[in-house]
Length: 193
Picture 1 (cartoon, rainbow, N blue to C red):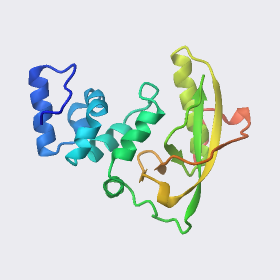
Picture 2: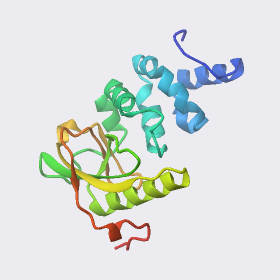
Picture 3: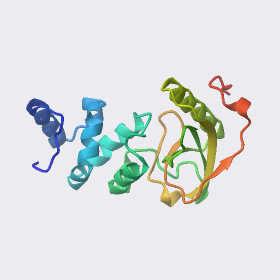
């Protein structure tokens, strides 16, 4: 394991990371947020030895904001992953779906809306996430508008499907459009049915 970038880690920490990789540990579960930068620097090497998917999927699932990473880097990491392996680690993409194409929604907020990979089948959840992200941006001194985007995607284009907080599809749609949602709907205390 000589191609690793252990920047910011002590010799002891690097040794522990090497051991965790050797035995196939999920780096995020083992090291928490400390693993994120390591994975970002080493995702190509992790992919070469078949250790990227487990750690990256957990890291992605437990990270709230990716502004510091950027969309192109996120997409590059997912493109490097073995899609079959990602899908083995997640909910079957076609589970409960009888069509080849599905409609998805994504809630966004902040000073700039960038393309993202997390999409939901629930318009209600997309509205909630737009509101949640607005609150996060306001706490960090950034204003911006809230909106919801829609897309229709082929199931074959989906990287994987998660069910952490809701049905979430990781995909890069070819085309997205903004949908009109009344301002009064953007609130965190949305009714739960």
